[in-house]
Length: 293
Length: 320
Image (tube, rainbow over all chains, first blue to last red; front, top):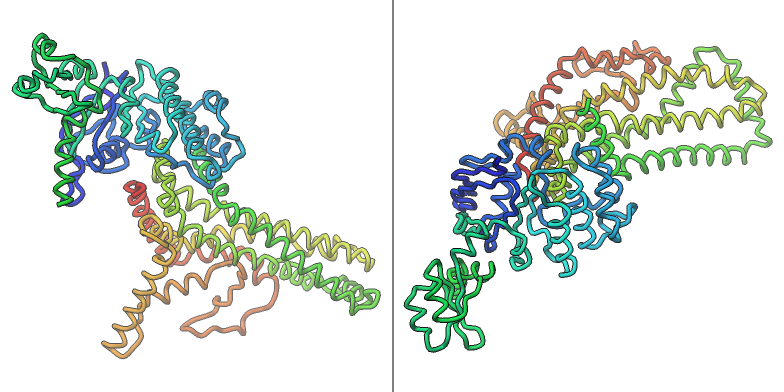
């Protein structure tokens, strides 16, 4: 299996700010990787390094090439949607399509038109006259019409309504993704992507705090809704997180004996969002309290 | 081959992005020139009963010696192009100073950088748009205007009963006129290349209003130099940055192309040797002379260095 992304001790400092602080990463092809982290954790900087949009220290190869040195060649095999609304606002839709067709050797106009068929995007509209959702539809149609090996999506659905977000991800999964491709997504709307991810990366203060496949995550972490009379017992088992919902205590455990846990309460698979809160949330809260004080 | 295709696509993008500068401005200039010509003719005919004077003048012109006719026709047509090429320079200055800035400001750089196009190619496309494509568009507008003016003249010629072909069209020496202008704008672009490259360079990194940055830096440097020179030796500096830049802008080839500094030496311009004839502006050697000047090639070298720096900044630029 060939590696799509290979990073060793990847670093990017802005003065004293360690935006990315020594990341090790190996992403093989055929994965959908979620890069999740709080604001300012270094997600965007890491993506920019991968896309050749910023310099870096350490080792980084994307599809066997150095992104900072060979961005133009790399972009034949890599597509990205960096945030919403970066299509040129002065252009008309047909101009954007024609430019992409002429500048990208792997672009298929037919496929782009196929994706645009069911949208309200008109060929002669100016990009600045389109709604936010329509711009994303257009951009996604452009990107999905490119036969790329790596697709990077940075907050692709920011500010879009839920109907559109659902369709976005189902299109991505059903019409685009296959064994040959890799998709790397960052988003705040964790609950929407967790069903499609194969790999999970948590990033905090420029470091990876979790780097595992979803299967491994589900094996390792388990959530137990504990009967009220056994709360103390559960606490003694060193949970990594505890929360209270409708008067019931919910504990998150890293590893542990499944039989024992079944005994003290109901076993669940933790959601990525709960795991996220457990692994970084508390400190984030503390930090905010410190700031407030 | 494919890189030429890419370059051409990128240059077409520039035309799409700035239709005001590259499409509507020349169209408006054609309209204005023709409007004022026709307005003048109509106004003239009010004072000229049955156009007797006008037709008489045309008949006299048709009878004048061939070299005079040639000089008048080429001179008039050349003059009609002056406004176009002056506006062109202004358009290019504004276009280049924002060419690498706008994409950073509206964040579309993130889209352009997602395409397999190198930064060098991008910068080259902007510069070639300014040096070749925009002049070609304006030259086409000039040609349209001149043809329209000649058609108007043809109408008057027929009214006056003279042969419009020998009176107007042949003396206009159109192939030569247009090739002199075409070569002139290319060589002028080379001559102004250091200034163009400076604008591209500024637009590649300026945090805001790149045109002001591009003007303020040399203006500030010249001012400092003057101040220092006055304070230290009570004299103006001999090697004067501001004057060098202004002189270069002022001694371009077009629009007027009249080479008055041909005999200038030591600041004194000698007009006595100049023979007024169409050779003054209709000669190719005026333009080619520029290629033999060392300043031309020093300028090109400075331009290449500035462009390399612009490519360096473009490679590092993102939306923030």
